[in-house]
Image (cartoon, rainbow, N blue to C red; front, side, top):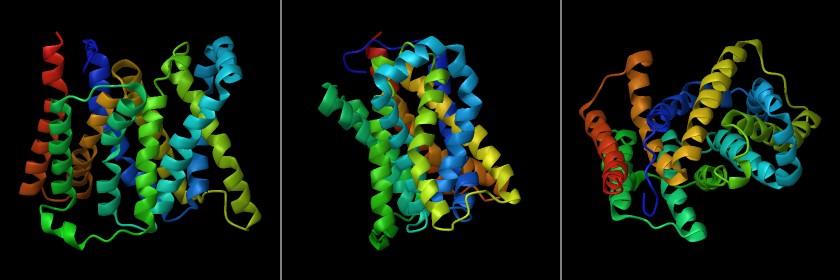
Length: 305
């Protein structure tokens, strides 16, 4: 990327290819659970379980973890609030008020927001290849989400849920940039992830207490637990773990571009698991997304070799 040497280690790149697939499982688990559980209770349950599972990694680096909590607790709470409160509970809440089409199109603006945040606050230069690549990838996403009918854009109507999704997209962009903070580099990725998950759980706790005091259910039904397990293991541990590994190795802007692969992965999952048919607009959209990602990343890397 502009002004930076390219990381030639293949593992972060492979992680970023895989991460969107695991994020896409949220469409399978999270969306159905959001219809059955309070959004804040769902987010709290999700991240409390993730935090518990990651605690051994935190304890393995206990001295460094204590130092980071003592010196950078505000940063950890900010990450927890951005990544688990807004980009978690608020997204589940928004899905009650907006369509999946609106949510997908709005949320896929987050890679652009990541680039803009880094440019405005960190002086990062934006290359033309990145701009064109992101534009092509976004068009591919739009083609898939709108099922090839670009004219359907004219019938879309904004609503309060769309504003929540836009806030979540901005929040995810800020989370992605902050996660690469030098203050957190003393810890391994999974230990940092554990601290952030605990911070997110703490941020969500007051809302869950409020739900309980208001008479709402805070214990998931037995039928929900298999989907909660999928949400925790695949949509959270695998997805966030791989993404954050990529962020630390490659930077937020570069990893954010790979998030355009979520709709193509979603299409493939629908075909394999739900028996949906592969249409021509799917193929064209997937080709556009992949072409945009290559244009935004590979040519720039070659120039820096």
